[in-house]
Length: 178
Image (cartoon, rainbow, N blue to C red; front, side, top):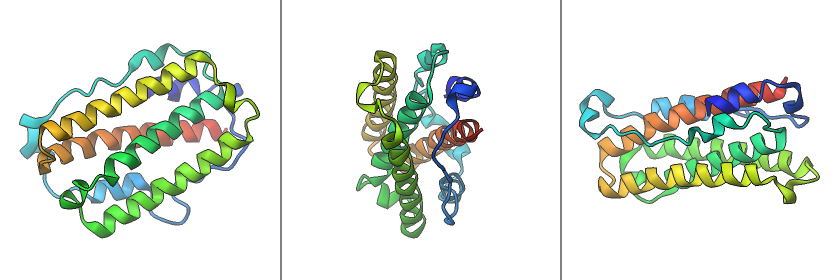
């Protein structure tokens, strides 16, 4: 993700469409912060390295379409993760609904941006590899939750990991707007 932030600072990555993190609703990052019910300190034994695909850091040729497609995939995976039935037990339902609504709006915005790209159907092989890497990363997170039987601590660890993802997506969005 850090690579996406660095790579999207190039002039070739300006985003023509308007992305607004939040759309009048609290930003998903803020909502996710508010969703914490237990201290991460009480869950240290459950901490794990989800092995973010740092191969994205080597993609010095990220174009705006690829960066947008990768962000879309990340947000879709986060949405899928927090839409699981097991997540209802871990979070305040009102905050979870607002969080999912904010994610949905961002996905919709990114989809509109991707629709503006004429060659979206023909993503370069590097883009497909990046998207597959993001899917594998989130698959690992899903397996972790299942292995931990969707415990409150497991969800807290995932919440903290997701905050990192949203932080970087937000930074990428800021860079792409320039």
